[in-house]
Amino acid sequence: MTTSADRGTTEGSGPLSNGHENEQGKAAAANSTKTADAPGTEQSATAPEQESTPSGALGTAGKAGRAIVTRFGAATVAFAVITALFGSLFAVLSPPFWGHDEITQFGRAYQVAYGGFLPQQIQDDRGLAYGGDVPVNVDALMGYSFRDYQDNPEEPGAMVADPGVYDRLESAPVDSPMTAVWFTNTAAYSPVPYVPAALGIRAAGLFDLDVGGMVTLTRLAGLLGYLIVVGFGLYALRERRVQWLAFTVAVLPIAVFQAGTVTADTLTNALAIMVSALLIKALFLGDGLTRTETVALLGATLLLPVSKPTYVLLAMLVVLVPVDRFGFFGGAVVSGFHWRRLVPWAFAAAGGLAFAVWMKIAAPTGDGMSLMRPRHQWYTVKPGEQLGEILGDPLHFLSVFRDSIFYRDQRWFTQFFGELGFAYIDVPAVAVLACLLAFAVSIGIADRMNPRTATFVRTLVVALTVAASVAMIYVTLYMSFTPVGYYIIDGVQGRYFVPLALVAFAALLRWMPLRLTDARGKTPMWGPAVTIVVASSVALIASVAKYSTIVWG
Image (cartoon, rainbow, N blue to C red; front, side, top):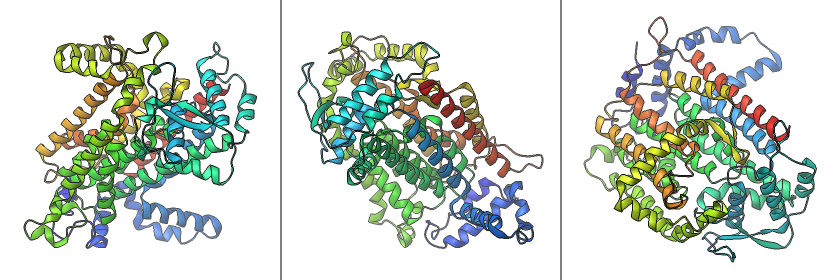
């Protein structure tokens, strides 16, 4: 039997196997070894005889479905169907602007849609503020939503006070006078993560949709972007069992909920998952990238650092990928040094420079962040003082970090699976259990990582990068959202760790030799795959049902 470890060390190890040459032969070899590993595929030898008898529409549909799965990969197809369905449900069921910071996220997206790329200071009697103009009728819906999700009745009353008011406000025309709205927190984000939402807003204007139609189309535009970017990452792993681990991360209830609302996190999560999938393919599995995959990885190296600053280090991991795994080297790999070997480093440097430039541009917005806090804490968030405290008294900062874990770690754990928007509804316990089952199975059947490309040193660098990225999340929120002298680091949420999950699991799998096998010592495929899809679907069904019941009654 050829094991997954054997495939990792032989497949793509030659000078011609950088992803675009001899690709058909490589795919055939991968398919043959997968059949040996997966008892669930052993029936394929008799399948043609069994499939030749069905006739009519059912038989044709079955063949078409199998062809699609063969072409795009089972995890890619399952992801597209499940995410499109449940992402659309969340987009429709979630009241307008009830997503995470969706009022300020939409305001920034509207600004970007009409050419406002840089932070714009606005007049605000409370102090320093950034924002932009939106139509009055959009602002009216924003204002009502804000009051509605803050003022909730006792259980079991529905959180939405009056659906009729939403119907009236959503049916108003978008074309109305403009008014300035506050969104200092999202003004700090670059235009990059808002591109899908901005396109949705412009499309809504082109089709002359009303306010509700604009909000829904903007949400669906973000969902489409998530489907395309993450789907591409899963497609790159279609010949490997680790595709199901990437699938499990991508369809977490929190990830799908955010994909169905207006937020910069939608594209940020998508880029992070795609980058992680391509890093797993090239670095941890040692497979060659195609030219398209190479372009996608290098492009994301530029885009991810300016989508959300806390994930800049994840993008920098491109420099760890062995040079012969990229799809553009050809003979340069075996002919000594070539300038193209510097391309990954150049892109990493450019991504780091873009990150630094945007941080410089967005830095002034930090002084206005305290207005997001309760009134008695206005003007208490001072990034300069917090940075001075970190540098001047690091032990005190570490004690605050420790207390933050003691007081909030259980909340972060639940939020990793889903705290759904500003309704603050946690996904049900059955959803968490279903996700844990999906993770256990997808990790258990994952391929063995290639020690030739994922060396101990490279894997250690990846693990340290993940740890540093986690630290950046805490430091960023300590400086930009936590009041001076506060007892914990405030504002940390479990969803912030989702973009780091896939590459963190990859590093763990490199050092963890244990895998699931059947009675014959082989790693099954279809049984675990079905388990993962069913478990993830159960998690999403339970989450949608709970959210709809509590919000709408």
